[in-house]
Length: 100
Image 1 (cartoon, rainbow, N blue to C red):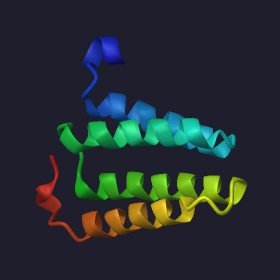
Image 2: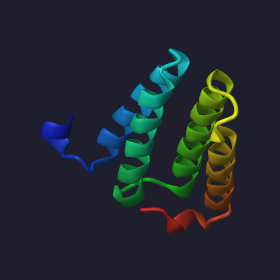
Image 3: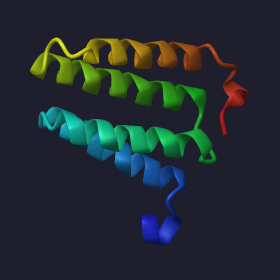
């Protein structure tokens, strides 16, 4: 996809997002978080990404950080998850036309 559509296309971001979700399910938390954060960076500038879609991604990032916190407790990953949840809420409250 990167070769065909470029690094900043919404479909490229969605591929990173799906891979991140799969890696979270597999318990590969560090890799999952990297993929989901890459998707978030792409979603911030890609055309056609609504605030609701970004909010869902932020929820997925929160889940990935919580899964990592369960696997490696006491390292503050729960606080990072809470920050992603807060970002998701902010995006849900954004006007529908404020997305790209």
